[in-house]
Amino acid sequence: MKRFLAFLGVFFVVLIGGYLQPVFFPAEKMQQEADNGRQKVSHTALPYEEIATSGYAAYIGKQASDFVATFGEPIEKQNTAMGYELWSYGEKDEDYLEINIENGTISAIKALNDSKSTAPFSIGMSLSDVSELMTIYSNFGFKYKENKYNIELMEEDMNYRPLIAFDNKTFAILFFNHGTGKLSAVTYLDKKTLLKLMPYQLIEGEAIPLPTVQQVNGFDPVKSNRVIQVINLLKLKEKLPTYHVNTESQKNAQRLFETLNKSQKNILSSERAENWAFSKEQLTVTNTFTLTNDEYQKLLKVGHLDKKKATGMYTEPIYDPTFTVLSWFSDSLYHSRFAHEENENIGVAFSKVSMLVLLQETEKEISQTEESE
Image: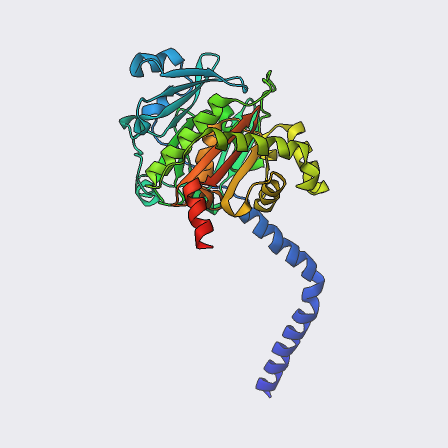
């Protein structure tokens, strides 16, 4: 009898609890609390660490004269349409270095040279080598001119374009070649330049608009040649044949550039044309317009170039051409277009803030292809 009464007591407690639980703990409310809990976890950014400032990082924010006092005068100085002066160093390809100067102050240094000044990094090291020295972080939060910014790196960013913070409040982006997995360049930069280039996802804050300075009409051969130089330098690091440059390949690139602007209705959908117009209006790297592979193939067809023997890319706006090229070689999609082992010609058409790159098989390769067919 006692066991029976005990059983009834437990039974009624369970029964009442089962009926009353939905009243006191509605399923919808419990689900919302669970969802809110998950959202809080996914958006919580771990604090990142700043490493000791060394080498080139120490010159970011300093006067250009300080750099000259240590490394000497640059080989070339060039004014850009983006309001900064570009200095280049290195008589040999393996010594190549670029510096961005704004109002006499160094805002960025792009080191493609294996120098002691890149320490603790060195050209040719792997991501695992870097990971042994420091932690690779996915979230960075900081203030610039009283505005808060929160940056998030995706998985590919962390593997091929990790961001490093120094204790002098500057940054470095490590560019790993997608073909070799080796470090090909280090870009040192201040907060302002990072927010102009912004190769990552901005969770909070907005990218800084690019300056609308006076821009010369027509093509810029100096920028075109510099882009080709950097592309070939990265090809050499990968032990791939460099591109050949001739008058015809340059003319073909310029003709394609003009064809895109004159015949965009035959190449772009109405929605994509609107995206392009919006990109021109906003003039920020977060609203970059880039031709898809299918659109570029249509451009080749409209421009009467053989689609089987050519490829390339078109993008705008471009703040820093060398930074754009480094980004391409660290990206799986774009890198594949440069990874061919055959001999090819290259043409680059650069106008204002827009750049078109054309890669074509050489005449020898084309004739061999035609004979095999």
